[in-house]
Image (cartoon, rainbow, N blue to C red; front, side, top):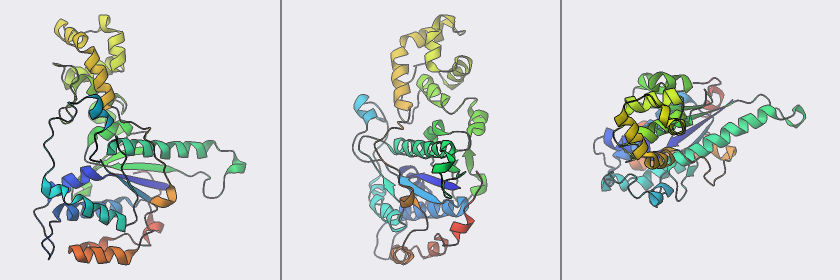
Length: 320
């Protein structure tokens, strides 16, 4: 079984920066975010024991969402300089572990993760339907699970049964970390993963400055999506929608914005990139190089937590 871990680099780095107090190397370089990211990365790898890993990053260039809607994420404060100066060092740590890193102009890390998870899922489906004569010992009955590691719940829309799940880590408390498969999404939100997009199209998303329908909150939006299945079905049945005249008026007045919000909230799974499985193999790295870097950064306590050759034999062969 393949287990592919897809890490939202920006989400984990941001969380690490705020979780750890200022920390410097003997040369005075600030590395608290680098240390926190490295700690969480190695902790997740040790806990989930994946066979393959990749990291996705946001880039500085504006995304297609920003170009189409200038107010998208307009309420975000600029990144702290103390954090931005640690991005390249963090990427150096990831590179030293020979973990591939993806960043595509015009797209967000979520879009990259969504595309890779789709490619991995489709590859599994192709292998299942491949004629026996074309299969070999490596592809027969091969299962793949994609685990998205992020602190951002936008990725919940990507969940597919137990084949694509979202892992929300809690620093140093893996027992409290949450794994969202389809059942968990349904339990928490009362909706399917794809319906999370419909929910946001109606209620909006303050963190990303997605407007939704002004005056429609989470409770009302959830009830509408549960009853009609999607935002589009709500509008196709607007004359029959069982709600107050006020809510119906808000829906009618903001139909265009609801449709725009759906587009903004939906993760793009067609980013132009390729997934090379061999590049993502976890154990294929120069351990001496990583140790040298960790000693330079004064991360000596993390050296014992590096992936070991024995991990390959211990890779979890069941879904988490």
